[in-house]
Amino acid sequence: MTDAPYSVAFDRASVHFSGSDAPALERLSLHVEPGELLAIVGASGSGKSTLLRCVNRLVELSDGCVAIDGRDVRTFELGPLRQSIGYAIQGVGLFAHLTVAENLALVPETLGWTRERTNARIDELLAAVRLDPPTYRSRRPRELSGGQSQRVGIARALVAHPRLLLLDEPFGAVDPILRPHLQSELLAVLREARTTTLFVTHDVDEALLLGNRIAVMRDGRLQAIGSPRALLEAPPDAFTAELLCGDELLHRYRRARLDEREGRR
Amino acid sequence: MISAILAHIALCAIAVGVAATIAIPSALVLAERPRAERGVSALLGALYTVPSLALLAVLVRFVGLGDTSVEIALVAYALYAIFRSTVVGVRAIPVEQREVAAALGLPPWSRRLRVELPSAMPAILSGLRIATLGSIALATLGGYVGGSGLGSILFTGFALQNRAMLLEGALGVVALALASEGAFRLLEMRRGRSPSVGVVGAFPKR
Ligand SMILES: Nc1ncnc2c1ncn2[C@@H]1O[C@H](COP(=O)(O)OP(=O)(O)OP(=O)(O)O)[C@@H](O)[C@H]1O
Ligand SMILES: [Mg+2]
Image 1 (spheres, rainbow over the protein chains, first blue to last red):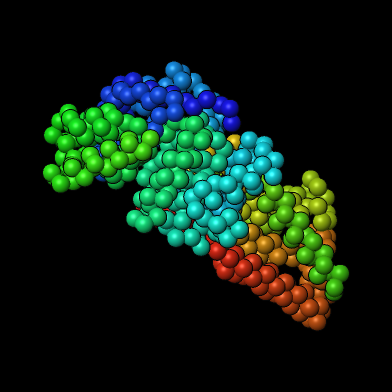
Image 2: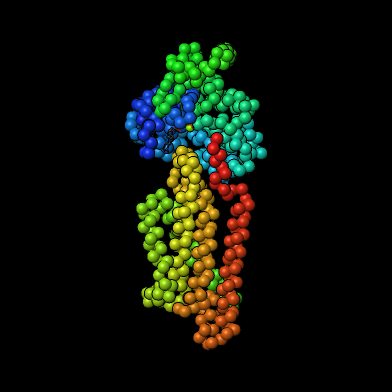
């Protein structure tokens, strides 16, 4: 729990999948500070998921390097590395044959936690993602809605106090009414957990709300990166402007919301 | 008669149990190593196609008359179905589920036992079902080499030209086969009804 959050550095990282000519990631360089929440946006197929998956080595780089705390991820022992990184895969990925609690307990079991500690942590996280623990602990994934499953997926990523979180569109199936609640809950959990987070989303407002910085991906390249304010006030290129600012009205609205968010702090 | 039925059940249960203990763990490991798996499958397949009487004859030469020879033959034949069904079951696990198991960083045996084994269970059950049925049929041949079980009644009946004994043995085997089928049906139905089966359903794409 006292483990410090990881820093993550991409250094000219490239990924070429066999069978496709265009690289999924092309000479991408990027540094994420410990404790930072980096929101990643971009069109479908622009390499957002691939970027996350290079960090926990579900995808191996064709070229370049990804480092955690300054150390090449390829030099870590794979099991412990992955146990220290929370990952919520795009599209949930709960194990159907396990209950909600059993899904959450997999990594704590591996780490040798006591049953009491595991159970307490599970209840804490279920409550944080707004699932009543007594009701949902023993449910099977089949008995959950898509949005509920996603929330269990987020809880599972958080359960073992990860030093780095990789969240791939974690709120994709959550309804717009519950979404803001979960976003603020997530912020609270993250603030308390003091973890570094890479957060992929299609929702620009979500990125503006949650991110310390926003990375804009386009065709496997990093198109732009900066604080929400910097990118909104002065988008460095037309693509970023169109994606983040939208039309005149939307731009004004987003800047006003950003003012409000920063005023609140 | 009762003692022959019990002996028959024991022969088959031990054979399937031993074969499963060997085949399932090796299949879980070899499912990740396609080349080694192909080799083992070919070997077990070759063993499976050896005519049973020939195999028993060889075994009797080295092990002697009696149940031990029968038991070894039964295990040899049961291995193939159980091994293959486990490999197929593991390979059929959806790629997202494999990735999640990998991303959690579970140690290999924890991943195999907690994730792969339960996910492959429907396929493994069908392999066990076939292996059990095969054993029940094959174990009758044990009567030929001095084994116990219903085969002893059958072969004695055959030698004495005693139709009642023949009928008794044959009906016993059929009854056992039906009982085994019924038991496996029940088992599969129970799994089918519980929401724990159905790997695909847990991965709604967004
Ligand atoms: N395992 C793979 N094999 C081959 N190509 C792949 C593989 N995974 C991703 N790709 C390709 O790499 C590119 C980037 O994919 P990626 O999943 O990173 O996109 P994304 O930005 O996450 O998209 P989305 O918003 O739709 O989730 C796409 O063109 C995709 O087709
Ligand atoms: Mg994606």
